[in-house]
Length: 194
Image (cartoon, rainbow, N blue to C red; front, side, top):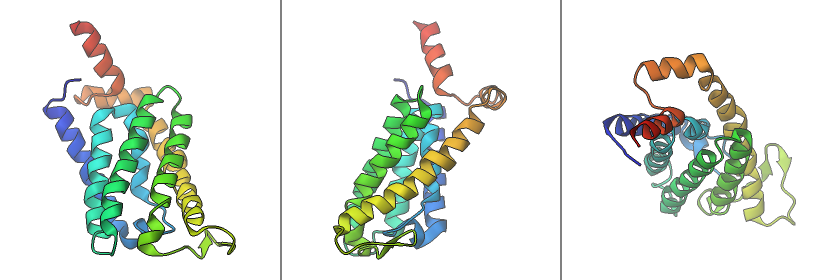
């Protein structure tokens, strides 16, 4: 895998955009019940590959540093939230031929990883999107369900729609004409070298 200045620039754009979206959204992007709009960038890993994967990982680290670190146990979110994005990005990249399945699986991964600890930072959810949490549910399970549902909306609905729009032939052609690399033209470039 070669990583040049264009890839570094694309990584920086993804990282900055992800972090900015988290910071602008504020505390609702870092809570027990959250709909993190920045997560809609994760499905773009299927189109842009490693620069996007690294970008959403670094962006989560930076955004979580701003929103979660000041809180008790916030370092957990900085580290594990970034790793959840890395896992989700790699999953979508590996399943790029089955994009919707990759987005759904990535949503579940983020929900399980982030949901398993986020309640330690922000407290137990009393409801999950308006539905009361029964006292019989373990707190962490309510948190996992909450984060998974919100991740499905952000990643598998909004992010998948964004991926579909950017994957259209005319859009991809326009991106390539401006020198931006997608996973498919990186593969063809490597084949022509070899």
